[in-house]
Length: 398
Image (cartoon, rainbow, N blue to C red; front, side, top):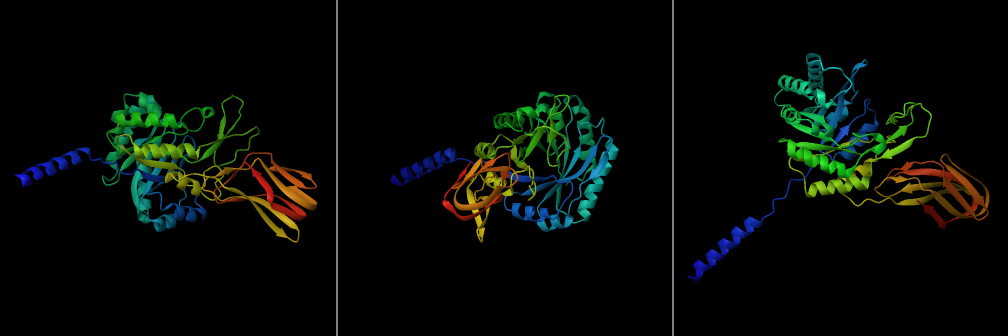
């Protein structure tokens, strides 16, 4: 009887434990867009250093624009083969195209697939990036259904999607034609309102999860742009390529802290069907408007973010090169001011972006314009010929 009672108690405990067992959601996949139209040797290090944190590369392959026609991205297949990660070919069909010629577009995409597979790439899918207006979603759905039929069944088809499509009754039917979707939640509003809003992104993700029955991803920003004035009042957006235009540039940059918080929240409580996060874009060493790869990796891992600006002095027979280094994992704005305790100086000057005020015992370098020091990077501020610079008595003012 005692054995029977103990057995019943054990069985009851197991049932209660099973009932309370928590089934954690699988970790969110993290991927990268590779958006450069012309690959360079800098891609080698960027791919190598990103491999541990991002599972898949979504690579710009082909673009079509009104009047300009078709343009192939000049990728480096050797680097992609060596990298070995799954590659998704992204086809950008400009939203200003009057219509999508199903046969021509399909033929162009099939040629890319054939070429990339012939080059030995680990092709894992195709993504169509087309900013169709809501009124054109029915015809876009027809195009996607045609394309899905034309592609190998083993090759997944996905689309870049816009939050504005949530207002269309066509959306469920559109999503039924593809295997997954990528909801872009950056650069989808009037740029004067900012590049990205984390609260709005959460709302869109939750709304999307209620419409789709298939996996979806969030496309998140890891970059910045500049807004320039124009004659008609609407700002001109400057991204990777500098525009030869006059006027004050207003810099917009996605906030790493905000996106780290969003990523942490989505991993802890993901909306239904959310499969992962895709970061735009893979930064190269000379990409002045993207986060550094160090910062991007830290955000993706939800590491604590911190900039650590320190004074760097290099002396040669009394001639000092003066600079700042960022030894943290977070890109930093140029410091507003740098003060150096000095003695016996007979010459000094600031470099571009800073101005110098000089006293017999103090050099003050003041920032004239904005700029960033990437995580792990450094920047020269100026020089001085002095008998002595007291590094302990010098200060960096963020």
